[in-house]
Image 1 (tube, rainbow, N blue to C red):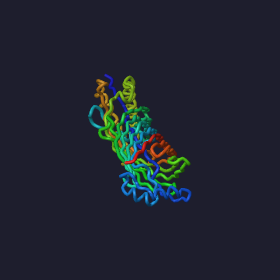
Image 2: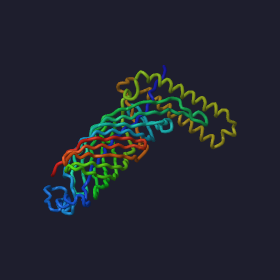
Image 3: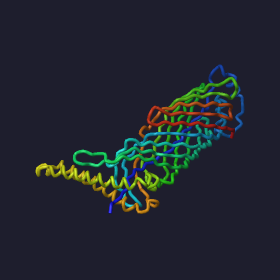
Image 4: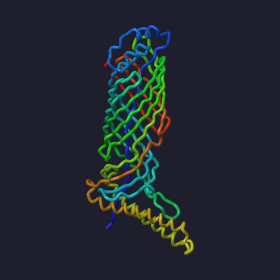
Length: 372
């Protein structure tokens, strides 16, 4: 009876959140002397931020102390995957790191982010994050087997895994603003709950920005423009489980199984032919011995994966694939530009775009602010 196998590769996608807003500003221009004088002579009516009254007396123009924003976020990023292990139906995990080679792995996510925030101090904004998103990871890879002194690609793998994620987190933004110019150093920590992962996916985002706020003639209306960087760090280790049908069409698996076994036998024959072509003296050389052992070890592992898969696929609907891997973004940093149009002190519209490296992202949203 023909033996059958399913060969697959799994990866994970991640979602990110990005945030920023215009900051507390020290009024210094003679052009805005009237505003500066009115600030120094006014009583600050809100509890937050702490030391708000002192900041106003010193000529700082404070935003309203609390806010709620809704934002649409999209990102696309290349990721690097290492230390891949694969198993079937909770059986043994086989090391596939040298057998599977990735040409490209691309993560995409889009969703909605809800962010309440409050100015705890005149120069420190703290916020919470809640997001619902759709994630996907598209894989372009190949199965490589050793034959003699070289490795040969024997099979292509192109698949796309899709996930839903619920994200929770928090962040804080230290800021400083003088004369309309400002710097903000946004940092947030998020955990994304994805059913297919054994534990939430963690991400840390750092986004330094520098910009300028341009006031309009109408009181409370302004335009803030900024540029900066965006850095993301993920938890590298990932473990999870997926249904076989989530990775490849089930009608293609028998063909892949047969192809896998055929390529395995071809590689074994090439390896044996190479070894048998060596003289006794060449076979006793440590380098050739180590090479032959390496070839046999790789082919044995590949055969083990084939055997495990063929035993697990009696019922495709109930067959699962377990995996573990290490992942990281191909580029930790990218450049970003953004802007915020403040309609009045309560309502603001903002947009931001990141680019220049393998990661691209867009965020657009609406914010409402109020005193607290």
